[in-house]
Length: 562
Image 1 (cartoon, helix red, strand yellow):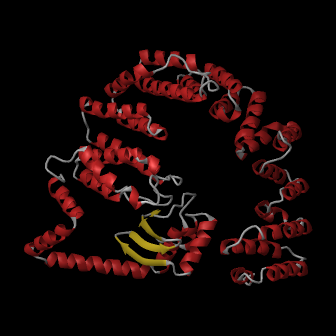
Image 2 (cartoon, one colour):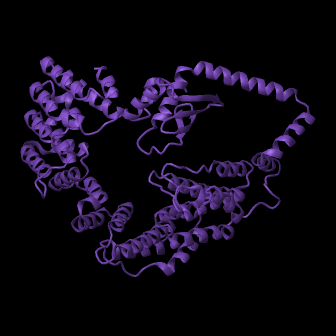
Image 3 (cartoon, helix red, strand yellow):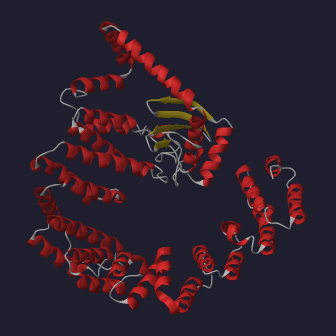
């Protein structure tokens, strides 16, 4: 694919793009290499970070060893992509020449030369030796390795406590590289040795799970690695095309892991793996037999014991899933009995009941259950039920349809429901609009949070109530909100906007230090500067800031860019 600045900009947030441009211009990107459509680099930040990018036909697939865990790509990947975009022809030419040279030398090499090279290299590179054995024989050792053998290898990556900064915790941002085991498993997959690959992935998932207490996983890296390993484990089992009798061993293994629930935040992943590998009726029936002793007769209320409530609900949802998949007459009857009995104990069971009734054409009954659930559960838990009622009411009950649309908008703040509500309200719109404004204006303590205030401003702008929109923006005492609605309001109310900036900019200037903060300050000052008619006052503000912070050269440097 062709990399352009516009394409790179679409892959990240504004902040990541801005910082990535800075890193690129500051020459922080080193060792950029392109080979077989894959780019690697080292980017200097707080430490050295390794970046890897696959340039696909219509997209990019990138990773970085930094702890960034927000939307889009990090600044290190952005800087690397910018470096590639600027110098792509040279990088591609060098990669092509290297490939041609390699192919030429390989073709001209004798069998004895190649054997000699392989002997020398495998003497010092055990990993290469293992890859060679797998390629030639399909096995790393005769008969393959056990899960325990692979676990020992994975466990060695965690090191000894003496190698870490404290006795039990691998520091935040330190990412153990499991790529050797992913590569090893992929080589087994390539040789269609799927069970051997499954052993590798099983070992990897088990060691990660067993060591979660000794890592700081605030960025979710280890959790993601666990999920990836377990998904690949299930995929390998499916690719092996086992008979049910053989597959049953793995179904039981995953179910025992699910029941053990250690650590508890991986339980859903074990259930998802079970759903993936239980592909036949025999599989589902075996799963149901494993589950049967654990299914509760009743669900404790959330208030009495939320842990027991959650555990019971998940087991019943698992039973419902199996019955729904089996879908014979006996299973359907059992499913309806389960859902009718428990649907008011948990909103997920209620939602599943409604979906099953709708699937079977029992829409009137589904609507009755959904209305019952809406009355029973708080709004934030009744979203699926309201969405069903949205479809049900649309051509049956205009009054309920309108009320339901309003409640969906209250909860989700999705503007499509606002538009639809306005379209069908006709002369009643002014009354409904008043209710909507009151809803977002009223809170228990008299304070409006930022999210509700933003929604109010959006409503006022949509309804061309600009004075009210300005009042809410000014009440926020927030530079962020001033900036958010700058385009819509600053030209209409230049005086109010300028003096709001003037009132808020000094506390913001003094709130932090550091070049990133100084750049943020300059960005806000640029917004002030664009408001026409206040040039002399703006110059006074900037002169005061420069004088007050005269001993901060980094700040002066940024201010001089205004």
